[in-house]
Image 1 (spheres, helix red, strand yellow):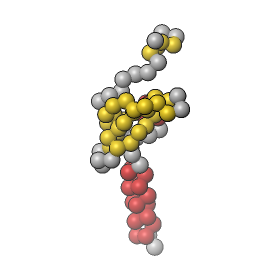
Image 2 (cartoon, one colour):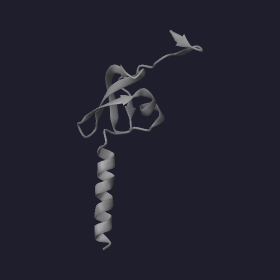
Image 3 (cartoon, one colour):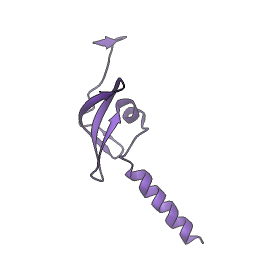
Length: 79
């Protein structure tokens, strides 16, 4: 089925978004299409299609943790 000539959802399996590789479709949550993704760090994450496509989510959260650690090291070095 389509909406305005566009498919309602795309198959993102195998696509890469930042550090995430889409493994398979996950059950919808709250009417949103979800995907099981594997992060480069080895963790898995369940992510909404729109978050992947828009670039809002690009890792399982490991990137944020790495950046926070780097910032703390930088702050401590400058003391």
